[in-house]
Length: 118
Image (cartoon, rainbow, N blue to C red; front, top):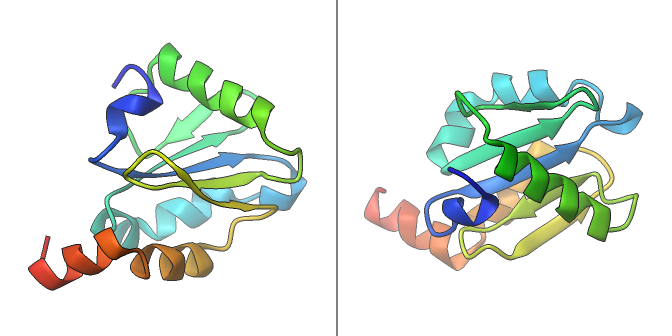
């Protein structure tokens, strides 16, 4: 995966710009790996010292795309949910995985996935 567009139609993305309000995000995301995998989520946390992800490797193009995306949104938008269609589905000041999971589970594409057992 060389840029964020490569994930379109395959994965949902959670992007976290780590600051004090999102401290502990990496641990929270790692602890929820079963629910995250079930929802086809790839996550990236910009720790300020680099990107941490549930992907084995992160290309420089992906990191650049994430930094550019965070440069375009409001500083309060520290957590972004991007749908499989590539659109931003939510912008939050902090990481609330339960709320993100509820939002995903209400999406038409996810409802179809749950029905068909994907």
